Structure formats: structure tokens, C-alpha cells
Image (cartoon, rainbow, N blue to C red; front, side):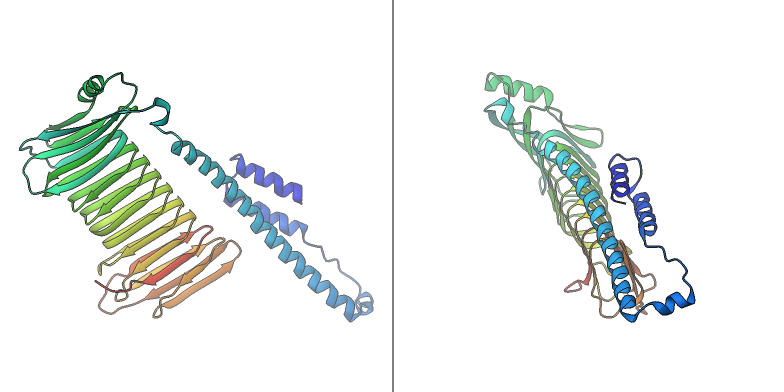
Length: 380
């Protein structure tokens, strides 16, 4: 049985079968290993003593308990192997340090200005650096850039390369910032006129992104190695994605937001109608304070999920976990169903408020961590 179990785990690790298929095989293996009861004659049954019967029952229970613990241990091992592989990949990204291999950088600052520029879209694409966006009452657009350039013999050479390779200009209806310089770090503080923009998009390979008090119909932010921080934004839709880096979104107002990370914590708090957060390795905390919220959904593989909603709205929700705990503390909901099956814990709940037509749909799933559902401390 141990050899068969090891073979199944090896198949999962090699990608031959999925974890769900492995679960089916392990369960079947457990059934095969259970002791087979053969029919006995009536006189043989009468020959058993009460002591023998009492000893055999605890033995069978102990076997079942041991099998369940082995099964949990097996899937924990699979999860740990996957997370070790994931962490190794993330560490390689972290260790891709742009500064160390090239010695001391040439450092200088530049101010770039677009006077009276008219645009509704902002597009940022930076290979190495940090970007911050701030609103201003001025009509001009300007960027304060701190440049760290490597592999240059002089400051003059570094400046010439920056001016030739760094793009900061208005094209049509779009402000574009572009830098694909791998050995030059650009830290950009961008100041834009305060107004409602159509689309703000940013893509960074190595570096952080932040924006404060900006209003746009659409926000799209993607980083490979870096944090994302958004404060006091107003938007129609926001899509945030990181490979290695946390995401913090707070005091925002929007219709919908979707956040995905592989390695990093997710924190979202605001008046939001649709909220989705998903992390492979990280804690997911989602809060909506909008009375007209439609959906809040959080998932995590190696991490916990916390969901916070208003108390004065109708609810229809489900929380599930395989190896973790489910903690739904909503005092006035009706519990629809509860399942405590092995590796498949689920709790369903609902609440009807007469003044609310459509319920807020709640879904939380954590493979190995806790799923927690609570009301917000105060309704705003």
C-alpha cells in the first residue's frame, strides 16, 4: 500500500495525473486495503467471546483513523512539494538583482514636461524601476525621474543613453512612458492633471507601482516582481496582477475589481460592487462597503481568506476548505448546508432582507488555510 501511495504521489509531481485524480486513486487504495469480512457459521459466531468483539471494533476504527491521517499527510506532502517548486521560482525572480552585477551606478535626476498636453489614456511600460502617479491642479504634465545607470563610463554617456532610450511623450490621445533598459533603473514620479481618464495601464517587470487620488474608467496594472499600492481611486473596472508582490487597495470606489497574485498578500477595502481576489501563496483579505454589492469572492491555495460584508444586505454564500477551518460568524444568517467530508468541507448560508432584491453572492475557498466571513465593523 505504501508503494502504491508513493507511485500515485510521483505521478502527481510529474504532472501525469491531477491532484483530484490522485484523491480518487488514494481513496480507492484505502478501500482495497480495508480488512475483508468473510461469512461465518452461526455456531462460529456464538463461539466468539464478548472480549474478542470489543477488541476487534477499536482495531478497525484505529485502522480507519490511521488511513485518514495518512491521506491528509500525503496531500500535505504534495502541497509542500508544489509550494517548494513555486517558492524556488519566486526566489529566482527576487534574486535577479539589477544592481549587484554591475557595480556602482551613475545617478542623476531629470524633469520631463509635456506642456498643455491633451490625452485621456495613460500607458506605462517599464522594465526596471518604480512608478508613482499623483494628480495636480496644473495643466501641464511632468515627470520627475531619478535615474540609476549601470555599465556606463561617464555621466554624460549615461544621460545620452537615457534621453535616447527613455520615452515620455503624448501620442494621439495617449500619454506614453516607456523604458526597456535592463541595466538602468528609472524611478518615476508622474504628475498628471486632475480629471477623469479613460484608461490607465501599467506594466513593470521589476519594480513597484502606486497611484493615489486618480479617477479613471479602467485601471490595469501588472508586475512581475514588485508591489502594487492604490489609494483613494475611483474606477469602473480594475485588473491587478502580480507574480511576486503584495497588492494593497484601500479607500477606493468602483464597480468591479479583480486581483491575482502568485506569491503575495492581497488587501482590498472600499465601496465595490464586484470583488475578486486570488492568491496561490498569500493571505487574501477582501472588504466591500457598498450597499449595492453583487459579488465578493476570495480564493487561496496556501493561505487564508477573509471576507467582510455589510450587515444590512441580503446574502447567499458558500465557504469551503480542504485542510483548513471554516469560520462563518454572521449571527442572523440561515445555514443551508454543512459538509464535513474528508478534504471537502463546505458551509452554505443565506439571509433575506426585504428591501433588497438581489442577494450579495459570497464565495470563499482556501485549500490549506482558514476561510473567515464577517460583517464590517461599521456600515458606510
